[in-house]
Image 1 (cartoon, one colour):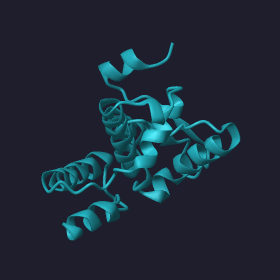
Image 2 (cartoon, rainbow, N blue to C red):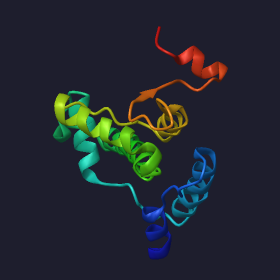
Image 3 (spheres, rainbow, N blue to C red):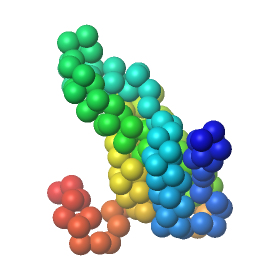
Length: 150
């Protein structure tokens, strides 16, 4: 169990690995931890954060509400895990942009789900081979186009 947890925590994208390959490497390791009931992303602090975001007091929450918030927090942490484990050469600017946005606005711009992280990494582009300009572009898939802001 220790090795499964360690392998999951150390998981990161290799330099020349595509986002799809990275995600496909991530999912089986996540599933092994779930099968072994290794709680990699469980932390009581997540319930406090989610409750605060929803304007609720942790003291007044039922056990079911706390568990639901833990599920939300767990999914959020898996998304952040995937995002923060991405190749720093390709996605370092995205990580820095999110960190700066959080520090400046005190809002949490990080992906809220594993799927959000995957979509973010798939859509992140650099403004040219030697450019430091970065931007977010929606992937060119029909469902992503429907979800794009108007």
